[in-house]
Length: 192
Image 1 (cartoon, one colour):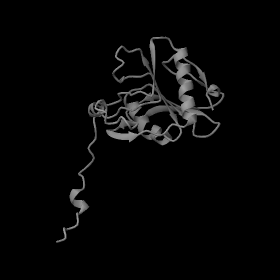
Image 2 (cartoon, rainbow, N blue to C red):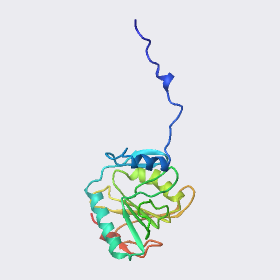
Image 3 (cartoon, rainbow, N blue to C red):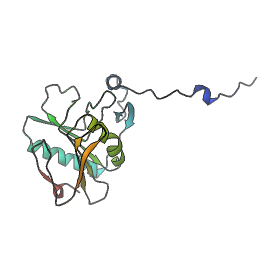
Image 4 (cartoon, helix red, strand yellow):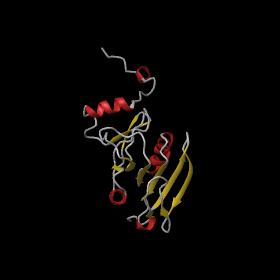
């Protein structure tokens, strides 16, 4: 006797089941993501883009420069979680926050978040940018390394409920001067 074919419409989900940041962290503690590089964005598990040489070179350079230039009242966190919202825990390439005695928790505030973008440029602009703005991060940089030999930095300031009110793109000849972080970086000094 032949069984009737399974009709996929009968088992189609009623919608997506999004994760909260608490559930995401509980699963991570249980080892659910030990062999994956994921972050939580708008309740969804999103695989992180592979890091090529220009990306890694830029992150290492910026990390060193920030640590050397800032005193111990600042904390530079490379590639660690930022507790942006109940449904989002992105992992920016670099985060500058105040010194925290609770290093086991993801910070909920930051003075500067930096994403180095090559293959992740669209995600960094369309998904992460509004998440960071909604979290009230005063300044967000997208360091664009997608074109060989060229670096531009999109500087977003004045967070609003839907994004950032101000954006400027800096190039060679310009200097990065974060609003709340006491450092200056010439764009021309950034590695290529």
